[in-house]
Image (cartoon, rainbow, N blue to C red; front, top):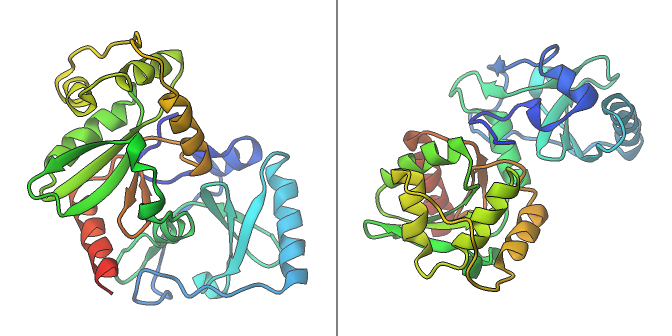
Length: 267
């Protein structure tokens, strides 16, 4: 499944999927701190265990809460991380919310910012030997992007990336969308000029080979990496500060994240 520019409950199924059509809300609050990062607090073990048990019973088997924090949202909603999603509930678990929270002053997407930090991966720990490199302008800034050969959002996003100046792009091709994506990934990883072949396909709709002409375990390593980093949709971007962004974001948002990552690097 391709991810969309916004984070929704589409990555969760069964009871949680019903939140997408029922209790999902985009909260716009003026009670949050002026900065994008929420001041979350740890939860006493007894309270955390009770809330987690109730929530896991609601969302069904196969889904686990990996972290819980108390937030300043509406006087103290609890934030629960389930996979690559955040859910919110009150202490009594009277309601369960899935959706985005926006700062009422800056309109920053607080949920997205929290997920970005919770799922951060040190950039220098990415196995860049599995990626191919594209340099726009001087290339002093950097990002890594995970894309599927048959992902329509990825093609749109690739056109966006082509407009971003002064950036080095490391592309990890991961087959998510079935056997044809797998065949194209294997063929691409055998190419001597992966970047050109990829841009010909993504930007110019020139056919991508589906027959591999070499023996390589690169595709299997990419699949393992995708699983390790919990990349469940494409495109997914990692910035130099380790933060991630899911979906085909607009150029303005990419520029903002590149600037923010550069500031972190300068500290």
